[in-house]
Image 1: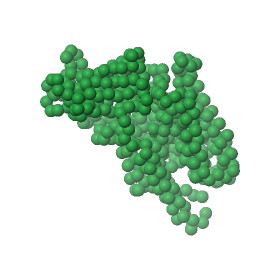
Image 2: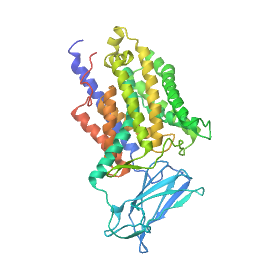
Image 3: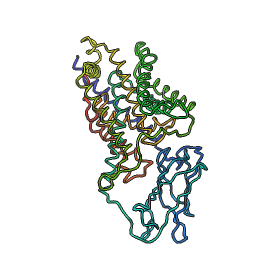
Image 4: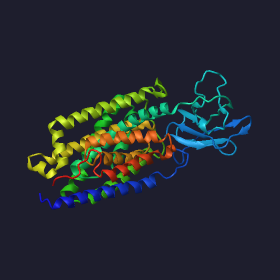
Length: 443
């Protein structure tokens, strides 16, 4: 290699990282714009309530509604009323009143004396599609949770979220490392996993046993990755398509797949059959976790550890890392680059499908655009850890997951993704190659 080309190589890498960061920030501005309280435009069912004290309405009281379609934030109006639209009925919604927004000296009280958390109400919406949830407000001492307990709880939830993100981030990082493709259609591969799982397991469709449906979903997602490479990406690579052209094609593919999903499942929210009990089990302090969350973390950890062992010790895994370092040199040493790239696409599809299943339980619910909502976080994790490094993607995903959850202690839930992106920008300014990335690649 001519050493005179090294500065130019570093300049190209720095310019690429700068452009990617600018693109992510631009997309962030569009995707994180303030949204209405409703989970989705046109949701058909109504959840409402009133907040009064001694007959007087309380304005500006903040409430969080969690259930199908994701968490929503709402504030009472000047008559003490609040209302949100929700996508599902015959399911349970959790309504949490933020006691810190109540006037001094009053709190939510429990008239029965049996509820330790009267500011949290779990209520099931019936077939009528309307549900009213009211709170009893009176004088009393608030049952507050200390900041340290809240922080530990958020860190624990962030690790769970980060492990789920890592499944998607590792796959997209492998694809970038071996082909230099920034695959924006990876979000739709995540959605594909959730949609196929619903189609296989729902009683309204095939109604297969849940575990069989989930295993088949991962297999079909792997087949989807292989098919996309065989029918689209490999022909484009052989025709000499550039990196920018490939990225634009991935954006077009993302849009096409997204609206294909909408055509088949509509714009509403679908639910997977329950994988485990969702009731919270207290662990320590304010930390509580459900069996579903435990199972999600266990599955993610087992899969990621198995993947790390494959990448470190297997012949194909070592070949994958060699191609990521220098594809031309790897090919010259006898490595079948096309075969390894095919395997990478299979693994990327399988991991994305599994991430889609777990994300459908995490949200909870399935929507045609659900993958798009975490795409920026996945790219942030990959860039933060180091472009093209699978281990960097894992580390970056854990950091992003924890930052997203912890930041909600200080900023509104609708803006919690902002903190992770700001940290990404700061890290790139200090260390442009990412936490585990190399400053330059030879060749």
